[in-house]
Image 1: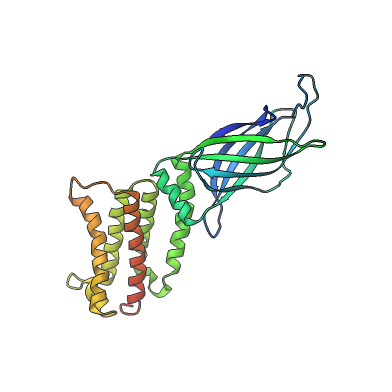
Image 2: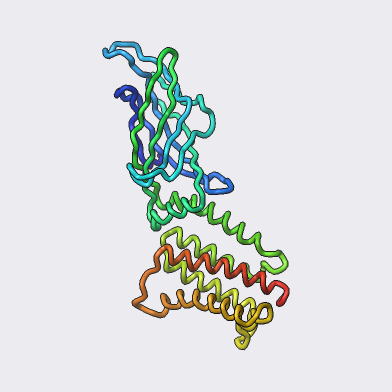
Length: 295
């Protein structure tokens, strides 16, 4: 059974000539987040005359543009455009669904805004479409009013997993091969933390970030008598060694509060992302400072 995220009727001069429904969303690899919205269109011939017996005429949808919105009358998140064959949608004299893919490109800021809106649950959005229509001898104006779509949490997480994987690959590329292996356990924990944020498990994400920092320290400090600050002091001045080791301690403290204090508040998405992103950047920094001191 095909999934239905939401649908809307299609009219020409107030006459219903079909419907469109959104059936899926997938991630399209690109330099920035790009998504494919899969849609199914049912188009029947248009009757230009007022009487039921008047002849119906065929028309074609030659292009589709639109907007993705956070609510019906809210500003657009981004622009939708048609992918693939532009002559593929035609009216029929019988009911028959035709597939069409609509693409939207986002930057990372707008993608994070969508994730903040979702808060770990299903993603609810609105779509407004402006199809371009042609027929043999007259101009037709097709209307598709804005309609809501609800993307289930599980479906959206499949898309997020692809993006999270890309981010992880980019993160690992920053590390020189001669020392990246030391921090692989920490990198793996940060992948887990990112996915926890995507699922809305924000407190779990902070606790996992704490574990990533702990594993990083264990890789650099053999024995209980050696501290991260002491290791860094051999690479930078004492003041900066203290600053960087204190940052690591504060991230661990964020996780410790949740583990050891029964009345600790649940972390927000912003707090969880702060812990995870700071851990990622700190790992990159410390790896670059220590790569030739403990090889």
